[in-house]
Image 1 (cartoon, helix red, strand yellow):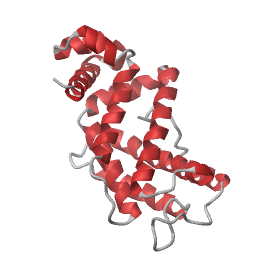
Image 2 (tube, one colour):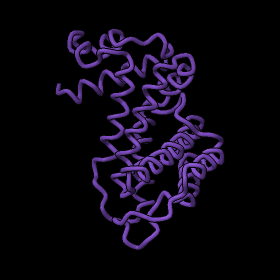
Image 3 (cartoon, one colour):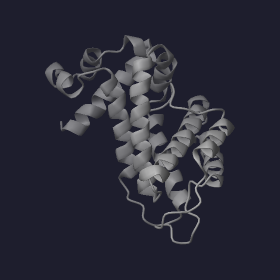
Length: 219
C-alpha cells in the first residue's frame, strides 16, 4: 500500500466512523484500527485528528487539479474545478455532515480549516486562470472563498443524487462574483483585468451571499 492508498483508507474509515458515531468520537487510532492500518504509520502520517480533514482537502484539490484545463472560458474552468472538489466531498457526505455539526464547538479546528480553504481557493483561482497574486489576487481569492462557502452550504442540504441544487447555487454564485470583477473582462484571459471592485464592494458581495465567511463549513 502506497502513501496515497494509506491516507485514503484512513480518511474513509474516519469519516465512516464520524457518520456512525459523530465526529467528536473519532480518533486517528480508531480510524486506523477500523481500516486495519498499522498504528505507528497512522501516527506518523496523521499526528493530529485535524490532519484527517486537512488531508481530505488535499485529496479534493488533487482530483480537481489532475486535469490541467488550459482551454475554455475562465468561468467554465472554475466551475469544473469546484465541482470536482465537491465530487470528492460527496463520497464522504455523511461523515462531513457530522463534522459540520461539530465545528461550532471547535473554534481552533474551524480556524485551521478556514486557512486551508483559502490556500485551496488560491490554487483553484490560479488553475482557472484568475490572478491570485498581490492585492488584486487577495480580493479574487476572498471572492472565491465566498463562492465556495455559499456553494458548500447548499451542498450540505442537497439530497439529490446529481447535486442539481448545488450546481445551480454554484452557477448563481459565480454569476454574482463575475459582476464584482472575479473574471477577466478582456478577450485575452491570460491578461490581468483592470478596474477591480474595491474591498468595500467585496464586503457588499459577501452580504449578498448571506454573509459567507470562513466558518464551520470551510474545508
